Image: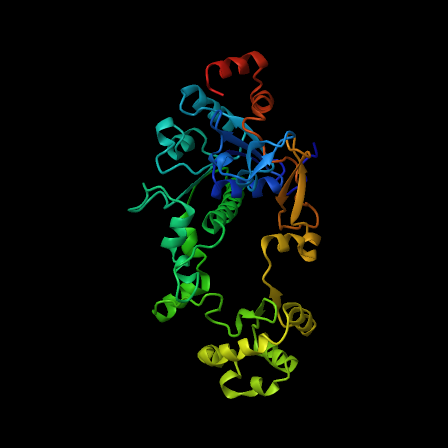
Length: 408
């Protein structure tokens, strides 16, 4: 096993999260070198193990319990099974926490309190530990007790009202973006809390909600509303503050044009042999193009159908005018730039048909402490014996007794 080389080497996280938001956070921490101990319920494990197909195939071509969904956010972790409904299981969690820097979970508000694993109990016993709690709506407020899921957060947070066809139904983003972004905010929050702990010796509670983070990443659309007080308009693929910035038809498909300033617009007009278009008063500046969106959009669509997608991309790239094709997912993973940047990886897997599992790489590139891919997504309880022996010194007989008692 390769030793961690990332900047978080020496940090250990007790991870009681499941589904996507929490596991996204802890996988990122693991990629950066932290030791992640994933606590799962015996037998079934993380709920997402059954969220398929597709599943990883074994050497006989049969589906395993390792779903693609689960594997997407659980590498660089060690799995231990513990039944926290049993007092002995709760004590085991606390014993392990003594050797960790933080505890992370995404149980419903109050869900761990009944086991003595809520923040008040943990903080009283372990005042130096960081306690991260991710929930649908946060620990306070009128919705605190509700169960929260990604699609609910996308809908309630406003982003669905901005996504989809202008005259059609509101659409969610094609992936669980509220979960993923909450996991990203959680990572930043946890690292900052560890920094505070290192300076003061004091742990603290991190209260993160899917809904809050969904509102936070409304970014310019949210501040547009707060600034002008008018309801936002769904623009399909168009940008509310930049024109032309949209998906346009070509002779053989579609091209994305992201013309972000007046200089780029002039270069585009020269490339298509229409320099007078850039000099026209109603299109002279981005401000004027936004105000005259309805006039310029049909003109752009008439222009873009005269060339193929590749002709646009290859012709505009040397001019510094941003453009791109609309790739399918398979096309994205075949893209030479994406492959060059290491965004498609393979890891050894003990039960896979070809001994491998294929995952999405981490986008962070350090010059001195590179991301490492040390462990494939673990099977349920795969490291139970290893962790209990390494951290708590429990021998085989003790571990076997715990298994017989249903604690593990």
